[in-house]
Length: 249
Image (cartoon, rainbow, N blue to C red; front, top):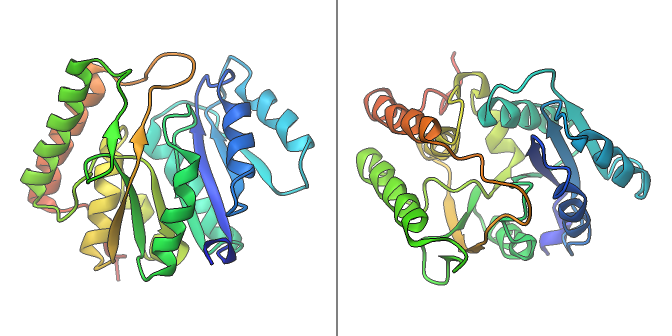
């Protein structure tokens, strides 16, 4: 059963005080019974305080907070969270999710079931049959998202449908085999880089359809600068690979 896997959900946050409590409660209530690790970049809106309040309502260890001193990108936050989760030795599976409610917690069960079925990495995928972006997204954002995904897939010749998504379930052993320090993409390009690293590693990658929804509160952190950084990073990956698929000997 999927809930036989010891699982932690890593949630990077910056100014998510309005979203994080509800998201944590939904994660903790999942039948797969995961723990949660929030990686907060010293949010000035009090996100860390909200996390501490939620942690007090649950058994010790179910909710942990890793506070970073500075805000230096999604990739750096995930690297810190992944490193902490793997170093603990407590988990078979490390899940990465957005903290804003965009990723459906209900997908954790089929994603972990796919790991039980032999996958090393499972992607919560928008661009497979049964997956979608919800109708709250305007047409131009849908077009931008799908276009960016197609661009990255074609340039990198990646054998997955959703290369740019950020909802993933990793076997901890796969994460431990990657050179996380070499996965240096700072923004959303990190999602592309890490999946590419898994493919280079020879991992079995499967995709589970999800409905990606609009965030519950606040505004998207996507910007033109982040998109430009990702496009340049994809060209670099085409030439040199992910850089983290193999540990240096």
